[in-house]
Structure formats: C-alpha cells, structure tokens
Length: 166
Image (cartoon, rainbow, N blue to C red; front, top):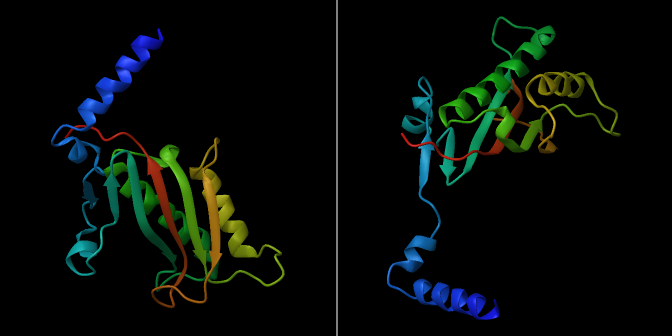
C-alpha cells in the first residue's frame, strides 16, 4: 500500500504542475444575485444584493425600517419584512434560511448595560421564525445610525448552498 500512496502523490504533483492547473485551483468566479425588483441596487447604488462564489452566498445588508404610515408598534412587521427580503435574495440564489451559516445584524437602539430592550426581543422573536437548529453563527452589532433615520436594523448573511446549473 505505501507504494500506491506514493504513486498517488506523484501523480497529483505531476497533474498540479501541468499548464492551466493553477487556473483550475483559482477562486471560483463570482456571480451577482439580483432578484426581480431589486435592480435599483446594481443600477443606482452599484452593489449586488448578493454574490455567489462557489457554494457560498454573501447577502448584502437588508434593512428594517418603518414605513411613513407605521408607528413604533409596527417594528415587528418591519423586522419581518427584512427577514423576508433576505429570504427573497437567498431564493434567487437557490438557497433558503436553512442554508445560512452566518448572520450579522446591526441595531441602532441597543441599550447600555446589556439588558435586552424591546427591539432586541422583537428581533430575536422574528429571527426564530426563520432560523432553525442547527443555528448559524450570529453577531449583533450596535451602531449609531444606518443608511437613513427611518432604518433601525439591518441583516446580512452568508449561506452555503451548492450552485445549481442554470
């Protein structure tokens, strides 16, 4: 068996030294993921709602904010819309919340001292509707402000899902 093992190593080394082998080992190409109705992201703001690289999908931040007709009592609906937005982008990439391995959320109203406030409780409540065990990693970050004053939270995720042939 040791001879077979050494032979395999020599063959692998020879193949790796062939022209073009480095290109085969290069990073997979990246693909922009733009769901229908989200073209403003690439056309106006020059970013992709998500980018696929191999089996990984990197979803840009999807904000939660109150609409002009909504009040503080509607924050749960706003958070839910953000989670639905992430789900829409993931679906366009052939994935779902079940494929998410990392969540990063940004929040404008964390309280000092670590005691959860109403927004944190609402966020966790909505998150638990979408995110099931085994749970992804999650980092929650306090920020002073998001893109505009109407926004109070934002969700960005990384998912792992094999690319499906188109």
